[in-house]
Length: 183
Image (cartoon, rainbow, N blue to C red; front, top):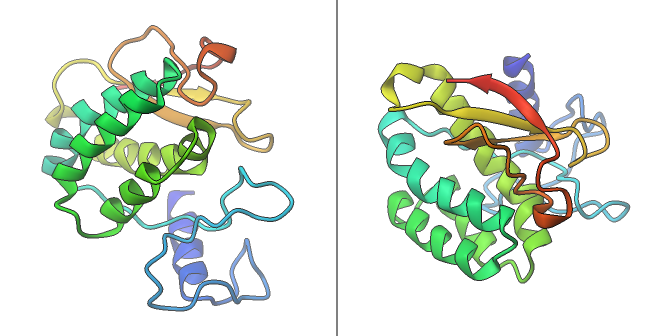
């Protein structure tokens, strides 16, 4: 299932016909925007998935500021989220798709704009890195899932503790979700 989505997203990035966009079109090849433009009908749904792939070493370095970001979003603190993102930016060395994503997140003017779709993209990339080599990461890691984030599929995130703290809704639905996987 993961391969099909990677192939589909690669086709979307190249503006070729894909499962999600049978007519093709979209972003111009070589365009460096991450392709997360919102659709006019629902601004919270991404129209394409950027390709971010963390190697194990980078993911190890990225997890502490990621967990700070997750906690800041769960606590509804835009200021703390931006502080965590600035730390995360140091890991990305200001280059590549991950840095582009973090730049987009830093420019978000509200928690909702930061949460969807950006936080999900970052979470999915880190979860993939952890899943590839769970033994490379110290301690327990938890992949959480909230079915309410997007009506058709929900969304995941990582936490360092089993006490669920939903970053997509914060105080509104702080404990909405479930443990999807333990690493």
